[in-house]
Image 1 (cartoon, rainbow, N blue to C red):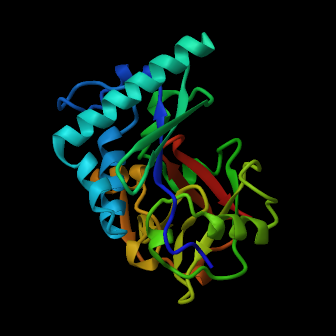
Image 2 (tube, rainbow, N blue to C red):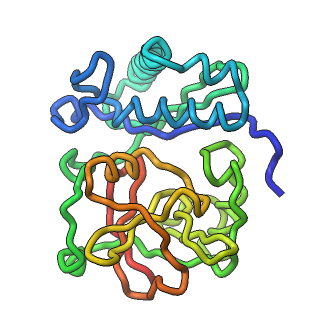
Amino acid sequence: MVDARPEHLYTSARYDRALLDSPTNVLTVPPSTPSPYLLLPYHRDRLVAAARAFAWTDAAASLDGEAGLVRLLAQLDSSVEAHEASAGVVGPLKVRILLSPSGSLTIELSPTPPIPTATLFLLNHSPSSLQSHPSPMPVHLDPLPTDPSLFTSHKTTSRAHYLDSRARAGLGPGYAKQEEVILFNPADEVMEASISNVAFWRDGSWRTPRLQSGGLGGVMRRWALERGGWTEGTVRREDVKPGEYVLLSNALRGIFVGKVV
């Protein structure tokens, strides 16, 4: 059973100075200013939505509106500056933003591999083009369902359901193995994957599971939906077939290719 109250809500973002040259990554404060943080306002929005869902009134208020985004950006900039000065290295970072019930923020930083910025925002994948992809991520199906809850709909530090799913799929403890597993609910509707949202080629477009199935509304998922690259709908577990290519997305790697095994 998951905790009734998580210790923190959180979101994982990408910091990359190469994004300053990306015309796509301009949803910042002030509007249309390039930013080294991938889609930062979307991260703020998901934290506020999660805080409201858990009735963390102080936490939601602390990040709400333009003032909340300015506060978040200032704390991120300070943390990154201190990290780079201490490490003596400038490069892409995984930025883990944790929000407490009182509204306090904790920023955790770690190096992450460089990725060409153009590939972060790819929406023009066709099923035929994916077949020539040199290294799609292996994607497994969880053999057992996961019950939807606030903990599957919002990103929190209570993540036992994802770890259990990965273990059942034979991926071992933790997230070290670079493979994915698809979660589904007791109604046999696909929810998401353990570290990413997922989209399937259905009826001539890329379809990502609807949020009512119980999965997370991820940052890159939102971006792909708003730009018309993906649609939203029900995906049945029995319709997911070995050998089919899928698109995976998260805010650290952007949109990338997987293959059901």
